[in-house]
Image 1: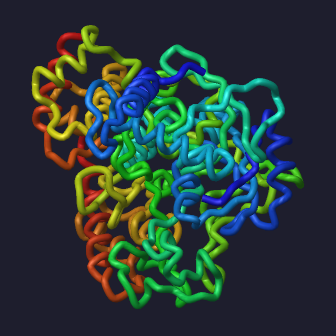
Image 2: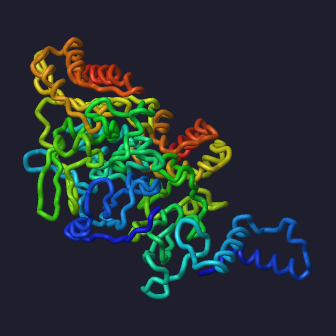
Image 3: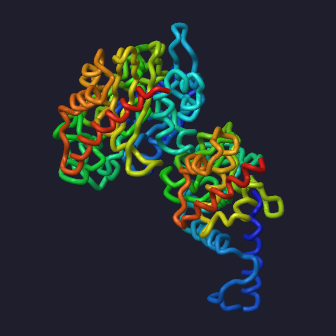
Length: 334
Length: 227
């Protein structure tokens, strides 16, 4: 592991000032914030992340989970995954988020990992994580080892000729279906970014994953009030029943009334280069009858532009079935 | 900082050997452990050849903080509270909590399995909650109460979870065991359902290559019933 300077921030402004020295907030950042450390320290041990300075932000007061005046929820960026997952309001009003969090990592990791850190979780692509292999995300312009290599776990949606790495988070898929907004504070002040515009497609710049700029710090995630009568659910399919990333997953928020779907939000995990909101699936659901045919049409629409690589073609059908199954489960009478 | 008990043993035995011309290729008997013997050799070797290496790789006792100026460039002062005892340390910030416990503080009960948060062998408690100590820097914990397996119970005064593991033969090689026990003890204060499946679900962050899982689950359930 490269040597680094270590500092603790006692205020958000201090953190911003330290972070602003970095030339980028993306891959290659010279200054990194550390909260739980479960992604950063893992990658530093692999020399994939090589910050020269680390700013410990655990002392900042950003860990509250509170209702908003409009009956939404604010989740502090430093709230631990375990605390969010077990929070009574989350379990009651945003069940998909609790289910997604509890399906991921391990109890120990969930006690360490934070909401903000999970938003910024990095791909598990073996080539990204191994400096012996060419990787455009880790070292731009060196090539993508995965496209002609082992890509079973990698993406079929949002890929480019330069990168097919999946975003592995469960939390982010749930937050996408819940239409979360990410609150950011930076050198130029505060801004709110809908999660749907927070993540970038790899395109020809896979090293750029989010809209964050140097000095930016995520302070919280806000969720709108749950639409009345909606239910939500997360379904995760993977090689093992525990302690494993998704091959395909689906986050559903849905309201059914009089045999018709009145409110539908769909996000897919395990298959996209970013958490994959599917407006295509939603269009096939909204206003339609609650039956298997509707669900299948939605699944077909969601995966219509899937572009599998040599080893992950199975994900196209798996993801469709995952979505159909999730929808079926979400409308079951309680 | 007091020398480890068995370092004094090594000195004593080594002196005795020199005095009577004992063949050094023969094994040392008595209460000298391999760990203390190698540690003693390592410290002597390093002192002879290079400035002290702090952090992940070395074994000399932690430098006492005489004053606030760091004696080795790039190191950071931190006070850690482990098993109720305070330790003032000067650390290379790259030192993980795991390596600090094992190498700097002579608390080797916590094990290094994968060093990447994937096996749970390094599980300790930070403020009563179970975490993987391999994925945290020691310098991140100045205000935390850290509990290791050494702080859970002692021979003759076993924690009920330790006693349950013994009674139910919840281990084979023993390498994952301290992590399993630390995880299970923390689990006692978490919302976990009553069934064996619930326990498996709550313990899946600790893996066991020997496959002692059925007995581990039995031990945990036994301790839960007692609690």
